[in-house]
Length: 231
Image 1 (cartoon, rainbow, N blue to C red):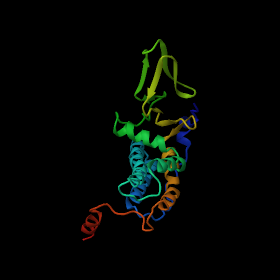
Image 2: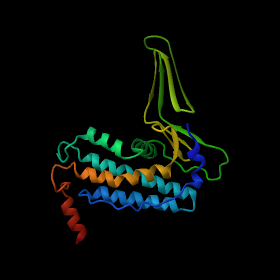
Image 3: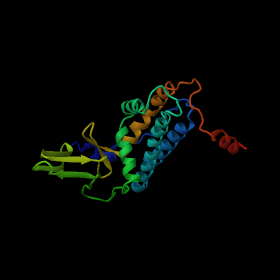
Image 4: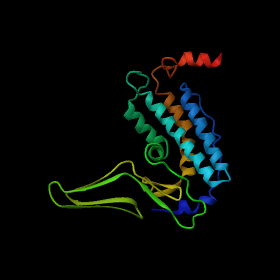
């Protein structure tokens, strides 16, 4: 497991997200891109490392919301897109770097025990692995199961009648998160920046998936709320 990313965090440049957003008929997608970029830029500029990390975590929520709103359009009852949920998910995974990692970070922060900023004054590395991970042995015979975290990241080993089940595992070391696709620990700032930089191109492709040339059809009540807000 490459730890270079964690040791180089202080030297990493902090460019802001300023890329133009292509037109999109789904205003929620655009809104969450703006929020994600705003929180990212605030976190990147923050002189206080703890406050900066918290702003980056806030950005993660809107990063995930961008994808969730796109996926909601695959609802068969709405009949909006030319692809189903599985097809769009595969496209998002291919086009948006760290797509699955962003999802797991958000899940562990919101649905599990929550994430906390790393201690900026720590002199040693702090590793946190979040599961759950279930190891079971027995049933039809003897077996062995164990789980370890080494140079190749989290690894499970089984023998005989045993199995290991991981449910959205998340490993972080001093605020850098393990990405199994590259076998590296990547700072949260890098994860978000690379994800957001790819979103405009994803929006352009997403626009082409609508069956109607007008794009997104407002949900029932959306027009009324929009008119009320403009009065």
